[in-house]
Image 1 (spheres, rainbow, N blue to C red):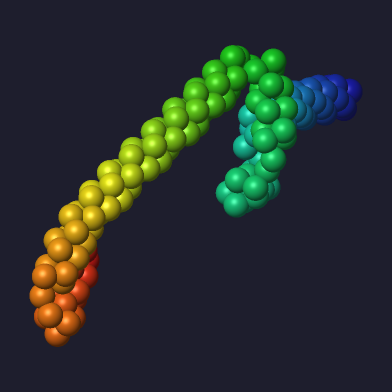
Image 2: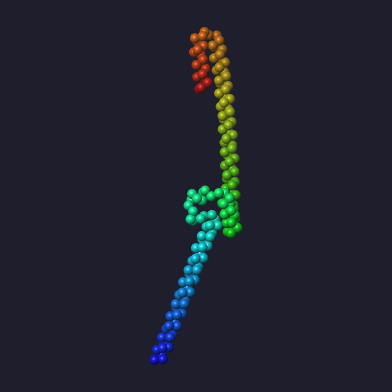
Length: 153
């Protein structure tokens, strides 16, 4: 009988060790997974990619918030977000300069067109007025519309 009690006691001790080892492994795994998921979420939030916000909300965020988030991300991870912000700013400047050049070119084209219209209108008016002074009243009425059609074309 005493041997049976010892055998049962050894089995119970082995079972307790197994249970303790399994519980320790499960608790360690759960803690490691929690830290991994928390780290991923934290990095996304620091980069400004809040998974709870939609794409439309991210576009509506103000420039100060994005600058603050990118500066936090630059301090936490690397300088890549700050570099991309400066690249975006340079791109915006170049686009603004290009639009300004296009506006200036359009103004020049409009000025040339106005000058060409004014010079062709002046020559047709002078020929129409010289023709109407040498003709009768009925023919001057007919020459006046021809001057108008010359100006329009």
